[in-house]
Image 1 (tube, rainbow, N blue to C red):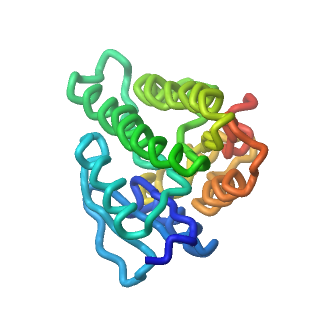
Image 2 (image 1 turned 90 degrees about the horizontal axis):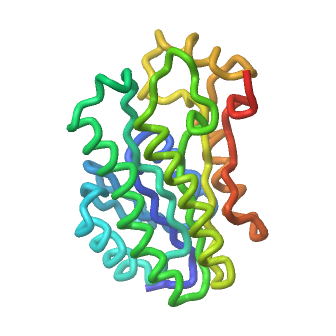
Length: 236
């Protein structure tokens, strides 16, 4: 086992932004552990795929255990897994609430906690979470309270973790995207979604990947919420 090369864990790594992040980190010579509820095995020996529900603490334990067994280290964790449910506040169901909290909050908590333990052993590491600029600038006509509740909490936790571990070699940041062109958004919604950004276009997956990779190399940056949103968080 060659344990000299850096290793990144990417949750929600099977499609969309997650798949872009897997490719981006591989292009930068990282070994990658990609996880999601269902994910196909890779022919690339430097990619380990692990299927499982990130909201289950046993999944988090397995991801960390298999990463260490296969690659010997964890340098980066990208918390990309998340679900988005937009509906009027009074129409959210108990099931909506439970699923959002499970994936967006518990999924962040369990894997991050276990990864930090490993990073502390080596005295270094980087954690990046993908959130949303709607936590800064809610938009009339786009009801997103559960996204704001869960992803806004992760933005706050990012700063708290950054301060808690700043002197112990672990940096913690977040990337806060606007609307990104992925299969999540049907083509017929693109015009409306583009109009939510002052630059009048949707973002691309590469925009988020480039932001995450910037933070990866920015050794003096921690506790940062980096907005990749075409000006959405600045105002309208």
